[in-house]
Image (cartoon, rainbow, N blue to C red; front, top):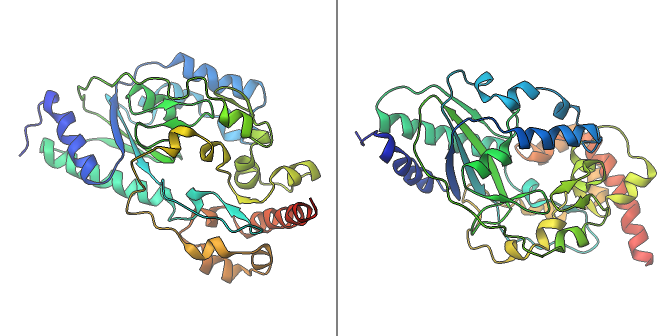
Length: 319
């Protein structure tokens, strides 16, 4: 058995996390986070959450993680990279990098389950834990910052040292105290304004402040109803998601940590035309996208996006 002493436990967990391919891992005590809650409330009060009404609920859980795991003593934040190169074909719909690979919910959860199993071997006794991957009312980016694994940039995305912002986050709430002094990270953005200047819809209204209702990712993924003509025009040639604010980020361009081996590009998705999408049946949609993040969106919304992109591509050809 490896020594489970709190002073060495963090080091042993870090080693296991590195073995599993995590780009970063950190530990935070579940102390109150009033500023983070204030930012969430401000977004809702200013109606910048669009129609993501789930952001208006479960505030008690966001304020108190013990409601998710009674007796929680540590929040472990872990980041895994999906920073792989991709080349888009001109005149074809663009798909965000996150959606060209296996569903990150499943991959990251599996990795966290493996990490938890390793932790239980380290301490030699059962641990009460709660695993979260982008589906629980947790202040994910805030806890990642408290744990010292990254800093939120002007595009509102977390930047992890050497990995950049092409990362997925996951958390393990644990009923055991882990002693670890978090790193003090610098502001990686500096005076750079590239993300704000290159957001085509003006969704980034100020450094670190976003109006989700104008964000292409929100429109193509989260919005459930049909587009207004203005919204259809806003998405441009993005079929699913948008990576523009990440593509122009100088820090991302120099990131040295590459994508985790669990993520492989589904090359066939890069060659899809809007006609291919619009001709999909329910069965062919399932065959093509099952296990992909795109499957969660559903065929109706995918075709809605494709119709808008088709019209936008036609407009681009005449410019």
